[in-house]
Amino acid sequence: APRVTVRTVAAKYKKHEKLVMMTAYDYPSARLCDATPDIDMVLVGDSVAMVVHGHDTTLPITLDEMIVHSRAVVRGAKRPLIIGDLPFGSFETTPSDAVRAAVRMLKEGNVDAVKIEGSSDARLAAVSAISDAGIAVMGHVGLTPQSISAIGGFRPTGRTAEEAISVLDGAKRLQDAGCFAVVLECVPASVARAVTERLSIPTIGIGAGVHTSGQVLVFHDLLGIAQHPHHATVTPRFCKQYAQAGIVIAEGLAQYASEVKQAEFPSDKYSPYKMGDGAMDEFQ
Ligand code: KIV
Ligand code: NA
Image 1: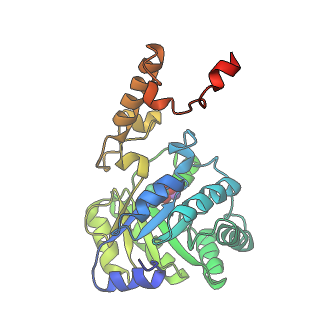
Image 2: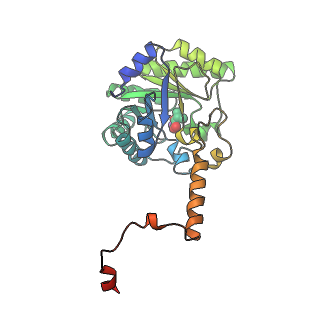
Image 3: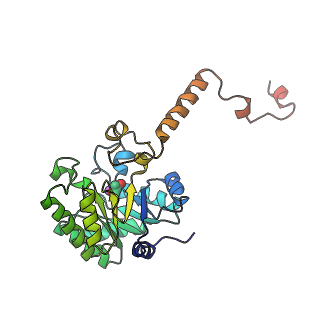
């Protein structure tokens, strides 16, 4: 199948075809996404910090770690457009730091594009600089988990007129700064719809209703694998679980442990290495 590029994404958007994005963090998840023809984009999200590394927030993940995950995903997914998150601390200082981080994600992580959270002046300057460097950038407004320190928690936004205006304004500025698409995270569907209608680039929603140009969900949330305390007991309210893979995995582990304890595993079938004729007599 031909590779998805930013041009493919723009063409589907023009035709009002919904865009499908998934996160992935390693080779097997990337292969599975690659084999799902309708998945257009794979995001190596900094959510890896929480769902894979077990951190409480996305802040601790480093650029080096994002590059390791990106390389694994790119090895597994040859068809979709691969976008890598620029992690907290890698791009906020100066536009040249942002370009340096983005260049590393492309040259070492082998991703096709990067994503940056937020729409403050500093972040818009980062987006402009990265875009000027010839690198495709995706924006991200609404709930921006990297700002948890300033916001004081994972909090949806856009529920007051003032917040809705700020989400719209941020998305427009990101478009003007050169973004090829923008994620809308945890905003009311009515706000996401208004933003989508007013932009000329695709909006990718998560917890933002059905009126966006496309959707994204976190791999572990969608498949019921997430084990993080925030996720294991309560899947995010906006996330539909399309499989309970965590239960399947737990059952497999329990069965394995039980069979080892009972000396049922490995049975003869799983003991494939046989000595040659007469070898045992010599051995003894
Ligand atoms: O890190 C991530 O998974 C994301 C998506 C939720 C958009 O940024
Ligand atoms: Na992210």
